[in-house]
Amino acid sequence: MTTTKVFKNGNSQAVRIPAELAYERTDLELEIERIGDEIRIRPARRRLDYLLDKFGRFSENFMAEGRGDSQESERDVL
Image (cartoon, rainbow, N blue to C red; front, top):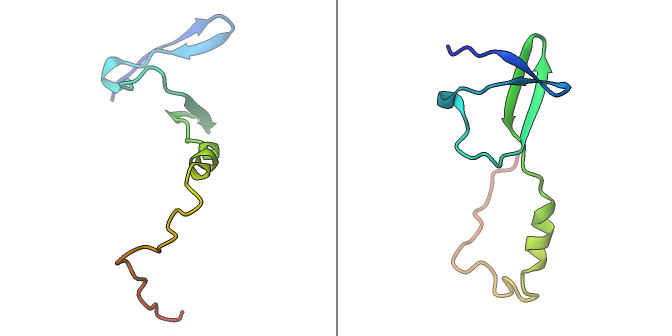
C-alpha cells in the first residue's frame, strides 16, 4: 500500500497522488466522495447529453431497409 500526505492548497485540502497511482491523462474530470473515513476518487461518469446530438446526425432513412441479415430470435416467455 502506498502512503501520501495531505497538504493545504489555498482554502482547500489536497492530496498528492503518487506517480504509480496517477491517471495517464491530466485533463480528466474526477468525482470525489467521502464514505465513512474513506475518500474515493474516480473518473467522473460520462454524461449522456451528447448522445442526443449524435442521434440527431442520423439521416431520416437510417435503417430504412432494416437490419439486414440480423434477425431477432424468439424468446421464451417469462
